[in-house]
Length: 242
Image 1 (cartoon, rainbow, N blue to C red):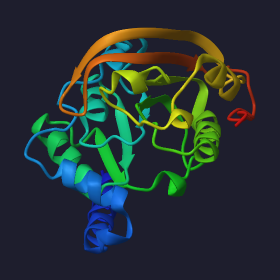
Image 2 (cartoon, rainbow, N blue to C red):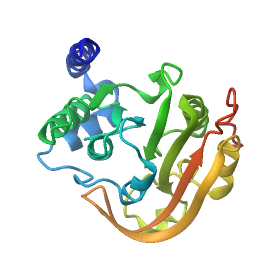
Image 3 (cartoon, helix red, strand yellow):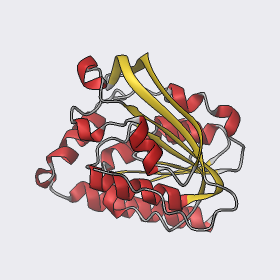
């Protein structure tokens, strides 16, 4: 309890500092803060369908990390499944909204979110049973390689990565996600990046999604479920060709 109280106090101070920073220095942050400041939820309040479909893999008491959790729909859902959830997002407005969302669902004691840039996140600080990466396609190829390598290190032996993103065909659909081909996923890219993990599922599909204003309509998707081998010492994954 003392740890959680300290974490909440530190998070509050961090958000106060972030909110006081001038947004003009980072147009992308300004854009997302503006989106999350709306009274609506940009991606809705329901969890991502792929993530929710993995419920049978989850066990109460597991520790989970939700990357770029925004307004909290995915991280808070994981908390409702009995997991202890750590989340982060670079938008202080999104983080504040996510904490309120967790409180509305009675999950404040199981969900902690902090403000962090992807490049500043310490992947080696803690290991997780579950890492959720849902539409985290905002990084350059070099940044993505570092993130994927960090994800592998942050998985406990036997831990699961649950990843969903868009394929390059998504650009033609125009129903969400980046329009930069280099930021989209292909099976070879994911196989190479997570070669050190045990691949449980890698599936391409075109499906209708309804996730608020942000993701809506027919979409070119790719799903990945991968496990860090239980007897594996130090992961060397995250290397991908550019």
